[in-house]
Length: 188
Image (cartoon, rainbow, N blue to C red; front, side):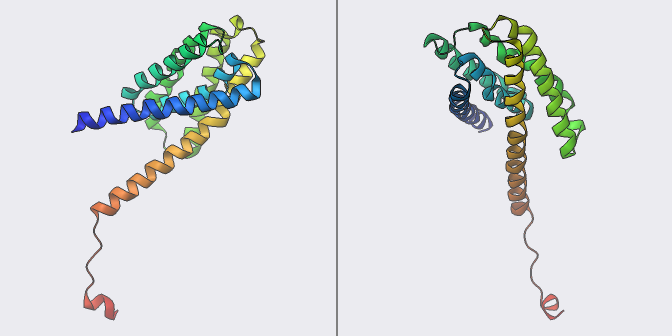
């Protein structure tokens, strides 16, 4: 039963992530009119946030889904540089570092600062490894990578925390039954 649950979650995540990634890439392409910059703008912020928030067992699903989508976009010549296939693997470095220390920080502002630090490292890595070989300026690459993360990472984190709290409240409501009403309580 547990294995079936993991397979179902993996398939749902692959489908959900692929659709959201394509939607964000389309919005980014509309804003930038550049396939490479579009892949670095909004989709990479979602990728980094999900890699930090989700358990590591789901990371291969994210990577494979994104590689498949980018390969398709390259074959359709909407992305002209296959170097962008390296982007998901660059995001692994800040995700691994942040994922290791994530549990130490419990306050909302601490986690937001941690996400911002991961985003900054991700931006620098993309600027060093990918930026010089794209047809656009390095500053545009850095700006697209940072801006997309600043827009999506806090939103994704808030959504994640909201869903987690709703799930916990549902579990607690099921485990703790209402106390029985006694006549003495009604009299008081």
